Length: 98
Image (tube, rainbow, N blue to C red; front, side, top):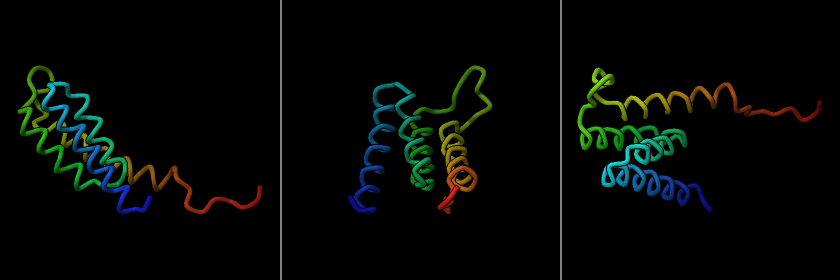
């Protein structure tokens, strides 16, 4: 599978999960879709989908009412975790010998 084909699958799966989370009123599906997109390195797509999901769900109520865009914040935090994790945990130059 080429890089272009894998990107298409990631975009499709992430969007379908996020849309299913809105249409089925089950927010964890939306979270999973956004996390898949953000953690795979497609941070711009994840942010746009998260903004759409935030607009569809509206502002949260209760104890989380100060978070006006929780899915967008999640997408940005996951994108930052991807960058930070790639920098510190994924070794680009593994050792050849012990």
